[in-house]
Length: 357
Image (tube, rainbow, N blue to C red; front, side):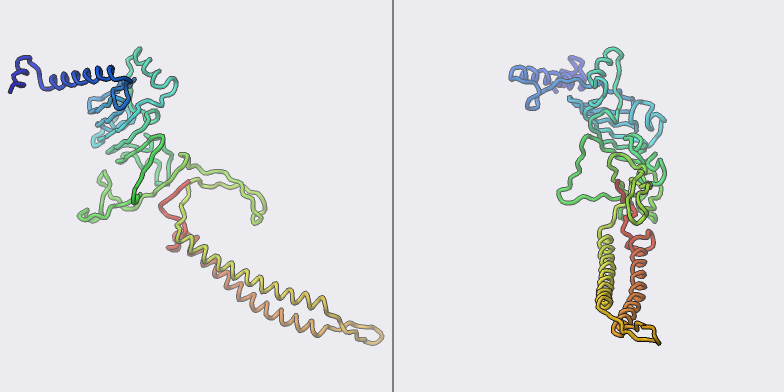
C-alpha cells in the first residue's frame, strides 16, 4: 500500500520504478567494482563495444551485456528484405540465438563497424558469416542458402526451401551424448498420426526417409582422378564423385569373408597346378627316348614313362580345371549380385541413405 502511494505521489509507473531500481543496482555494483579492483573479473561488469542491433517491429529482443542475443521474430538471415520477413510471409516464426555479433567482420572488424556507425548511424543485422556463434530456428526458410551450404544427396537443388529447419554454426561444434547419440531421418513412430503417419511441418506427407550427408570442406563436386593399374592398361583419367555412400559394416564383412573363400579356392587350384607342373618338369628333365630303326634311318620312339605321366596329369588337370572354372565363375557372379549390385539384393554393401566425402 505504501508503494502504491509512492507511485501516485510521484506519478511513477511500475515500469519506471523497475528501471529506476535497475539503474540504482547498477550504480551500486559499479561503485563496488571501482573500490574492489579490476573490472570484469569474477563476473563483475565489463563494458565493451557491442553493435547496436537493427530491431524490426515484429521482433522481440533479449540482449545481454556482452554481445549475447536472443531474437524472436520472423525468418530473416540478414536485413529487413531478406528471408521470409522480406516477402511478408506468414507461418515463418524464427528464434535466433547469437553470441559475438559481427566478431569476425573483416576490414577493421567490429571496431571499424563501430567507427563507421558513429558517422553513419549504422545498425547491425544478422550476419551468418561474421557472427561468432549461432543457433537458428525457423518455421519456414531456406537453411542451406542462409548458411552457404553446398547441395548434398537430397533430391532437387532447393530441397530445404520453405521448410522448417535448425542451423547451428560456430568455430567448433560439439554434440555429446554421455550414453548414446542418434541421428535419425524419417517419420517418428507415434500413434494417432493418421494413415500416412507423421507429416512435415507444412502438413505435407513424409513418405520416405531422407538422407544423411557428412560433408567435410563444404565441397561435393566430382573430382578428376588419375588411376594407375596393370588391369586397365596403365594410367587413365576418370571422374570420381566426392560424395559417396558409406559402406554397411556387416554386409562388407560378409562380402570380404565370401570373397576370401573364393580367393582361397583359387589359391588351392593354383597350388594343385603347380604340383602337377612340377611332376611334369621332373619327368621331362629325366626322360630318354629308345632308339629304333626303320631301314637304315634311326628313329627315336616315344618314352613310355613320360607318356603315362603326361596322360595322367592332363586328364586330372582338365577335369579339375573345367569344374573349378565353372564353380569360380558362379561364385564371383553370385558375390557381384549379392553385395555389389544396387537394388538387386538386401546385402548391397553401400548405404542407400548415408553419404560422406
